[in-house]
Length: 427
Image (cartoon, rainbow, N blue to C red):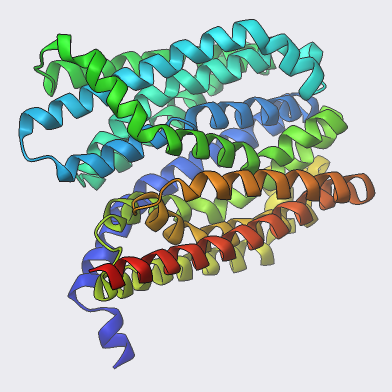
């Protein structure tokens, strides 16, 4: 009876969609993993430690404006006319371009201060600046992915997501084969070339294929679009920074060779984190239809549990073979990364438990709650890192992110369910 319910027609569709999305997510995670292992083996621990800082800042800068994509995905189903949909898309694209411009200006003004006073790596100021600028530019391309995600064209989403890592890996491999081992200057140079190419290609594709609009309306529509998504943008920024505050904190405390060990742990956790992307891609569009409807909420949570079950299986396998994986893929120079790897995998599982509930809050009647949650996470994360890292080093950072993720995920679950109950009673 349980299996019949589990694999009902609705869940069969969900599993099929998860497979479609999973192809792209697995490709993204696998290529990112291979790219990191390649750099770690070919370039050495110091370069890989600096690359760990680079890719962390890149991810922060590229994911902050994902809130704009979420705003677009939420808004489109409520529009009645195709023309309004086009203007919404144009506003989303214009908002991304504005974000890129603001980021470039801020980096040029304050990049040196960030490298010296915050990250403790003044010798890497160019790497730090390029990381943030590259991430901001890449967010334009992720807008194209969000466009097809909203349309639920998951096969195309799966094709687009791995493009960045595939191009970076192929370019670095060829350049290493022809010239020499990649240093950080070569790596960052490849990144900036690839992300500019992808961003320009996405803009041309959207404007020439999908947009036929009166550009005189864009400024006003964009302002309204940003106002709607502003709370999500701020909360997303704070949340993403708190999620990777561990690397930022360790960067100011440790040399690049030690930071490289933590980088290996982060990359190993990627083997488990692919389901996180599936949860985000599939459940966020559905979350807006769930709040206040007990039947839909039950189905929604059943999907989340199903996806999380797959992730737990991946975590068990990865933890069991963690020493062998690190030795074979990264080399014996990184063998001390096993302990922190296990902790970071646990952190991924705890974060995934809270994601479905976070999507409910984001698409519900009180998305401003996410700002308070993000600020709380930032404070808890910094406090835990400040207490545990001095005594336990890399493992202390792992303990800190596990404890923070546990507390935040429980809080998000409670708030989402209370908000659902309140919406149900009002109907």
